[in-house]
Image 1 (cartoon, one colour):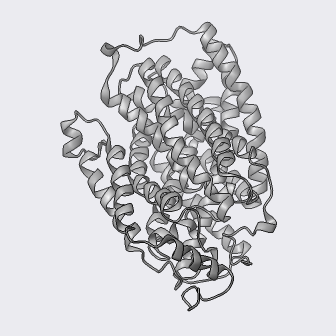
Image 2 (cartoon, rainbow, N blue to C red; image 1 turned 30 degrees about the vertical axis):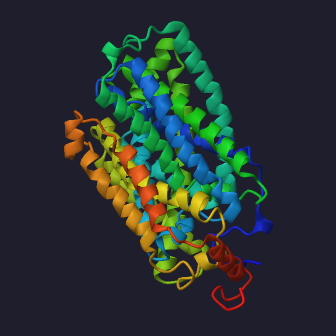
Image 3 (cartoon, helix red, strand yellow; image 1 turned 180 degrees about the vertical axis):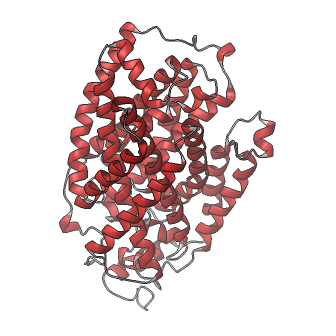
Length: 468
């Protein structure tokens, strides 16, 4: 039997909850202002409302597919997603993807704090200098309380958000003339469409780095299909619905900031509804910021443990939470201007960094090792998975390198993207390249021998001893 070696592993005896709880976690995880802002990206580039709606739906459907497959790993292994990357990249090599994860946690929280400040300024005229730190403090307190409080808060936020989103959507459809024309070839513009498609996909894929941090608490007998569909439906419905609200609000009020545009759209459709809608979105922003802080803390603790093994403690968890929120607060104060542009660029960079990782991780879990790992050896710095795994690192490097000519952001536009008129299709290159490179690197890999070694290790035996 595997003992608890750190806060990272949840023993089978301590698993609890139901698979359908994933629906509320990831619905409310998407039903807040940061998701609204994601729906603005294509419109800010001049995209037509009808085509941006298609881009949001397709992008969410595509990105959530990968996210939900990562979620199924949690009940099987009881591990956070980043820890589970050690078999693919090595005990030390996994620090590469953990660095990417920290960029995501801290970056999203910085933009969350900017949106919270905009919301409170729109509602009450509050100065960002005061509201950003207060919002950060409240989110950290929820994160300190831990997993169970986050789950309960997410569940009630989900119920509340469903109600307000239904009211808003019905009011807009009934009373607001929508601009932009229909879905015609004449209205289609490739650059805004692809920007919106990949912004939505990137936003959903970004959950992949910690989606199993929450599914890992579920009982081990929760099936792959159950955890996949509850995660997929919650994240897709919450993400697409909320992004489309942002798309509509930006189309109606293109000159306003996200929070102000949302309030104006709600008040125009149903007078007086703008304020409660923004407040409910703010509740969702608080809980998702707490969730990001929790994930950042786990990652920082794991990084520290990789460099020098140390037992977990409440004090260390609090210090890592404070370090993460201070970093995001500093970024928030530097990102208050040109929000839509900076947020769109952040999502693009995040997609470039996460695409090769998600390919390698999913191929390893579903095709190479087929879910059979030694949890004990994952925590062993000199164990069977090694300190550096050249297969995963090489595949990641190959996928990322071949994406570079297709990068298309305000800061850099690769030659391939320029030849395509600025269209960003980097993910469509990096995903198959990294997956194929990893499969080729694993040629000759003895799956059955690896499974036997993992089983022996978890029984406390030498995985490489004779007689296996």
